[in-house]
Structures are given as C-alpha cells and as structure tokens.
Amino acid sequence: MKTILVPEEDDGARLDRALARLTPDMGLRGRRRLCEMHLVLVNSREAAASYKVRAGDALALCEEPPAGETAALPRADAPRLVARTKHLAFLYKPAAMHTESLAGKPGESLEAALEAMLGCRARLLNRLDFATSGITAAALSPAGEEAYRAAQDAGLTQKRYLALLEGNMPRPVLADRRLLLKNRSRVLVELERHPDVRRHTHITPLAVMEAAPVLAALGLPASGSAPESITLAGCVILKGARHQIRAHCAFCGFPLAGDGRYGAKTAPEGEERFFLHHGRLILPEADAFCLPSWLDALDEEAARRARLWLKA
Image 1: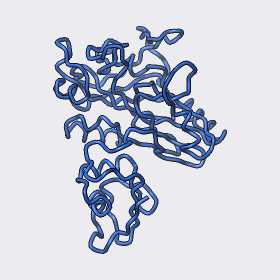
Image 2: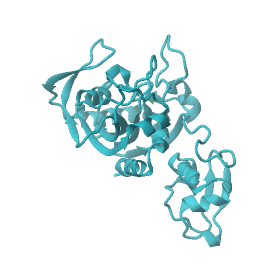
Image 3: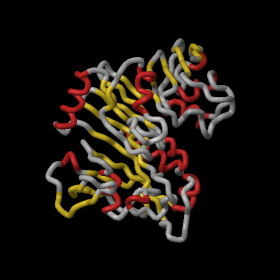
Image 4: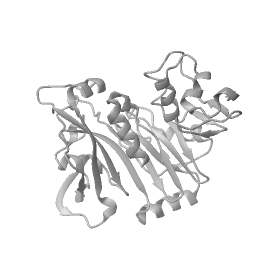
C-alpha cells in the first residue's frame, strides 16, 4: 500500500487533486475513479473525491494502477470489500460472476472468495443474478444475520439499483404487481396488486440517451429493431424477490437493455448480459455504496445524475 503525507502546500485541496502526488501519471478523471472504487484512504478511512485534505493527512492507495491508465483501471471489476461493521460486511460482486457456489455451474463465485477476502467465515445474506453487479451483504456473526433479517422484515432496508432500460421512460413508475415465482426460469407478472410494499419497485428515470452510442460503448448489438433511446433509471426495492426489477421493468414496457429473458431487443445471442447494478444498501446501522463499472460508458450528465441519485 503506497502512502504519503499531505504537504503544507496542499492543505485544503480536494482529495482527487492531492492524489496527483501518489499517481503523477494519472489524469483527474482516473483519480476520481480511484475514490469511487474505494481504493483511496485518508488516515485509514475512505473519503470522497471532493474531500478537503489537511496538511499531515496520510493518503494511501490500496491498489495502484499502471502509469497512465485512466480509462480502465486493472481489477476495477474484481470482487472487493466495500464496507464493514462489527457484524456485517458489504462486498462488491461484478457482473458475470456467480454469487453462490452452485454445483454444475462453472466459473468463480463470490461465496468461494469470502473467507479469503474477509479473513474469517461469513454467510451471504442476499443474492444477485449472474449478470447483475453491485453490493452483496454477508453476516460475520449470527447477530449480524439476525439484525439484517429483522430489518428486512420490518421494511427498514432500502436497496438502490441503477438500470439501463430500453426506450424513453417519461415519468416515474410504481410497479406494484404480484410476481409468480414458483418453478419458473422466467418470472411472470400478475395483474393483481401486491399488498406488501416491500415487494414493490419504484422506478425513476434519471436520463434519456440516444441508444446507438450507448449500445456501442457497452458492446451490445444495435440491430434495426433496437430502440432509439436508452433510459438510465433508478430503482428502489425494500426486500425484493427473484428477478423483481427485471420483471417489473419489462412489464412496464421498458426491459433492461440486453435482457433477452424479458424481451429486450438488444439481447446478445446465447448470452445473458444486461445492465443492472445494486449501488447502495441502506440499513438502520449501516450504509454501503458503490458505483457500476459501466458508468463511464454514459455521457457525463447521465453519470452525474446517477451519482447524485444513489447518494441522495
């Protein structure tokens, strides 16, 4: 871990600018990404890029990228620890990685890496789809698991997701229909309203973008049937069920870009690849936050709105 002390001449400077002394060959945008990826510590604690440093502060870089690398930092999409409390840990799971170790399914899993990442045994508390990235919680003790389950049952958790949807969503939507889950690879949405608000999905459009450049940046096909627009949306659920956001968004007419299972026109053949990111998990005594690796594929205004919405 590379460390320096902030000199007198940098007293009061923003952290992303003071970091130039640690990463002299990296641009400002790359230094901001280091902060967003929680790779920078100020006096052994994480800090935002806008944090004003003081002379004598110890700046540490947990994982230094190669010189000059600004667009794609190494291991930016590797699993990592996001936050930790006495009884809970919050980890980042990248897309194209299983949450759990499943018999008969090849590939690495977050579950298999838990003990090495945390230095102790832990139990996963929530699961993300293979193609979904973001925060996964793990209990470090029975008390942690009990507190997490109790908060969910009481409706005291809030899970914030960022999603890229096909089409132009004009206004916020409350998706409150029941989901038919049993023995189905594709969840069906019923017409009956679910009485439990913990099973509802709040969908808020944050930015509407021209589809072609976004799809090209994401590596998705832009066929003749592809939509003209892509909507960046914020989705909030309290407890959640399997495929809840994917099914509710598709039911509202705006499937996740790349999600062929739920009718997206931009889905790659034979590959499950969509853009859904669990960016914030709020509990009564904890608040974990991380940004998606695909945020840089969007224009600056859309990325700014995503950050503001997640942090609100």
